[in-house]
Length: 377
Image (cartoon, rainbow, N blue to C red; front, side, top):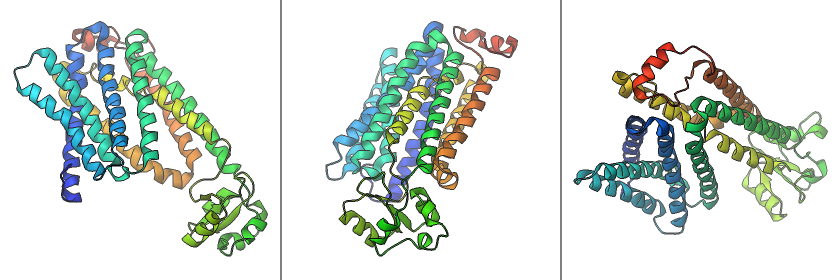
């Protein structure tokens, strides 16, 4: 991929990377759970998740370091391949069991690096995006450390429920913040708008323009934008969204908004997103992988583990690909509310259907599942 001559070859490389990541995400948790002592089985599978998130964190650091070099994305992809080469050399040599486990860990980190590198290749010059991704990956890694400590102490089920409760609370906070942003955005000032010769046609034709605010302007027509006042929270202008209007707005040292509106609660949204990651990562970020590596009958472990991994990746694809479309269709606040409702349903599902596998030897897992009764225990 680093030496690719065109986009088609890069796309083929990404397909192979995706296949490798899918295989690693299926086999690693199963192998670790089978080889681990019962009392620390959950922690060791969680350690695999931590190494993946730590690999993501390191990959962002590497990407950030190479943003100023010529051929940025080629350097990123090339360096991400080095740990995989080292792992392959160790596996092909006469290795001890410990060396092979180390190679597996290196491979997991590399897979995560490749995944994130390919996702960000088109935005390598955007340092802000990389810094935000670095923070996100750091919070994920920190949450995975919490999971390693708690999962064999509190149990899988309780940790998942605590995680989901925190996720619901975080999504509720985000819903409230974005709802307040959408309904309490700065008003549209006729005086401010009249200073420009590019007034939004929908605003000019509005029956009651006095009730217009920033979000009304942005949602009225796709070619309307908001030029904020010098004090962002005071009434601004609703203009046609083109380069001329944007240039006039910038010439007066004002900010130009096309997707969102200025508000004083933006920092609360950042806190809410951080809390969401911190609650999600220790529980729902690791517990599903731990449970999926434990609960299947021995004769079906491979195929069931593969089906579960495929389901997780497909679900991840659906959410990532549909999120922006859903937010544009129903608004950001309602989108977070929908996710909150889904999380509440997930709490019910965990309580009713998910077994507690803490301290259960693999040999007794199938019998435990046959005998267990529904409920929280």
